Image (cartoon, rainbow, N blue to C red; front, side):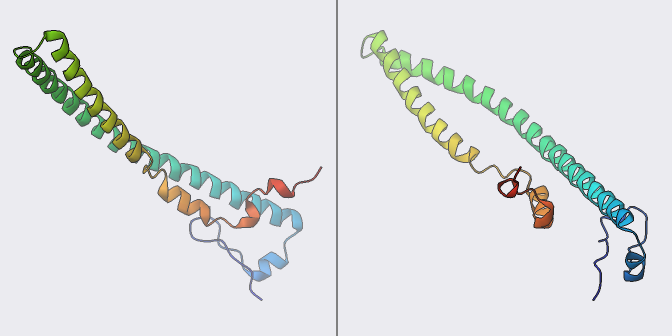
Length: 150
């Protein structure tokens, strides 16, 4: 029967443990090694999450800047087109009714845009690499609060 050894990512400078070394170790020494390995694993997972957040954050920030500029340009176009529509409609009807029609059109556009934004927000992927990596941690290391009794 072989004893599992440390994987390549968990090695903190020590050589992987062979079966003879494990048999000759005390329970305290084995627990210290397990604790050290778990601590290293958790630090690596946190570092992976931080790196992934930084990488995605840069992309989001850049995209947000471009969307902000495009949004302002679109706002100016929409403002002047709305004023032109209002002025054009006020030639055939009262200016108040013309303004109300323009406002209702913009209300409908806002509702459609809100619906599209909500659908897109539901598709945000989160921290995909970190989630995949954490899924590989054995179930024995994950907390099971339903099984804890006091």
